[in-house]
Image 1 (cartoon, rainbow, N blue to C red):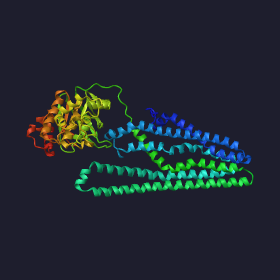
Image 2 (image 1 turned 90 degrees about the vertical axis):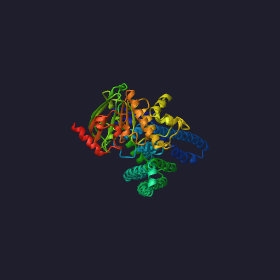
Image 3 (image 1 turned 90 degrees about the horizontal axis):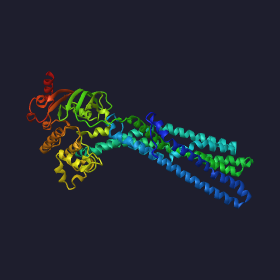
Image 4 (image 1 turned 60 degrees about the horizontal axis):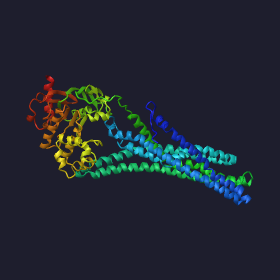
Length: 584
């Protein structure tokens, strides 16, 4: 029942609800029979008191008992069926939103500003699925049947109906109060929960830094303060819900007794029978039970509503249509035209007016002081950040014309912050491609110069590296990430400070890898602070203050051979180079 097939021409919420219209109608029809069969107990009591006892007829009692048991069996079966369908509906929500949620924390943070915790959408799915699988939705489907039960009470006697209606209005009022009083605390609690989770996750990621510099106690105090606010908000919400739920239960019990009292008066006045008196009490209990249940489940309903709203908003933002035509693999070169880049969600450009071209077989080094825009340019070249102005083109086609998976096959990217995943070395090199061949994995390892290092390990390519490559050294992680960037012989290879953790042997392997990209007709972009990374490039670009200050052959731009350049590129040196190249 994967029924959430949203039509792209309709608003997502309407489309999502329309896609499960058949299921909702089915649940509504089931609820109809459930609520009709729920009258079994009341009418059994009515018949027992008005027919069996006055007539002293055991056969009638046996007959009524058999009919009642049969109807209760059907009631239980329909209740079970409704609950299972609702649970399956919750699974459909997961099926529909699952890919969107994964994309939200896999790719969306690089394309737009994310104000909330990155894993919140996953918790939103769990919240909605959990609510649909619980008793809350059944109360919502049963609530519309309250007028039906109240109508039966009026049929029994007008005063029984009046008492029942008064009690129903009180409970509906409590439900409205629950909605008003819990809306703000629920929203505040959700925001504090995100803050608490973000701090806990950041502490986990940086546990070594925290432990080594001894500020875990201060972070603990900070977390305790946030957690205290969270507990206080949760307690306030829970107190409201529990108080109103208890009050509604008391009101329902008082109302049952009140109906019995009114029925007794009517029996004494011979305006009703004893059976009507007992049946009315049971009927009013059934009529108001959904309201009481709804109040008790209101906290879960409010949380599910907020989660659903965020998921719908996420789905609307996720709508990206894939190109209808798949472009061929690039073979000619890279072209950057008047590129302006900003961080996702920001308006201030970090990179302005960058234009250059790299033909197949060329390697370009990008140098510049810190915060000059080098890493921002790398993100723009591989399509992580979308251009505000201008374009990045492969074989004259802008990156936006490529389907993301197809584009990724033609790009190799080694970021500053190396991100490896729990799994084997082979899986990480192959980018977790289940159809990857051993030859392709070995070829990438050899291109990065780590084949010998890997085969010397006890498990070789099947070595499990742990979360973020915890079992490897910094240099090994960087060289493994280089092999991943080279996997599949991508046309464009962008390396952001690829030798930050490498020794002399690693530097030599990096130079050979860049030469390999050039020999097979690819384009290599190398961002570097250490001059040794530029040994394999033939052109150099100088960036400063988000603008290109120089571009041309390596020796010409740097003013001297790479071997004679100082160990680190300084901002002062870049300033002089920039002025000199600009003057030319």
